[in-house]
Image (cartoon, rainbow, N blue to C red):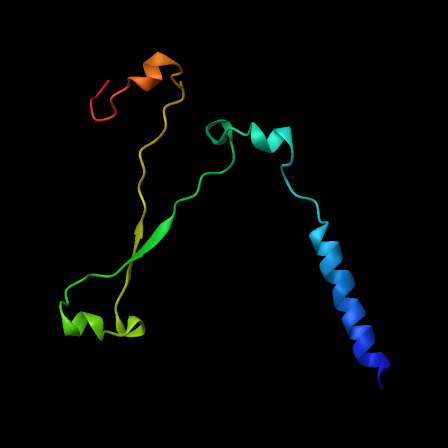
Amino acid sequence: MKKLPLFILAFFFTIFVSNAQAFKDLQGPAAKNYKPWKDNSKKTTAMVNVTPNEQQGPAFKNAKAWEQETVKTPLISTPVREEREFGPKAKNRKPWKKD
């Protein structure tokens, strides 16, 4: 009877140890020098749940999250230009002005 819990414990211990030593994608200098803007992987669109905030005061405080209606909206970001600026030109760039 005592062997079964010990066997289960040893089994889970071996599973956790093998998962801890699993291969990671990027390690060492490759992870340190990774440039995400040069990555050509498939681009995805992030979807955000937006809840209209029409209530105020105690009604908002006591509102239940599962009773609210949500709308999925795509998160839009500005595209990154292919040519990157470095040095003083990048330091003195004013993003609010059109180039």
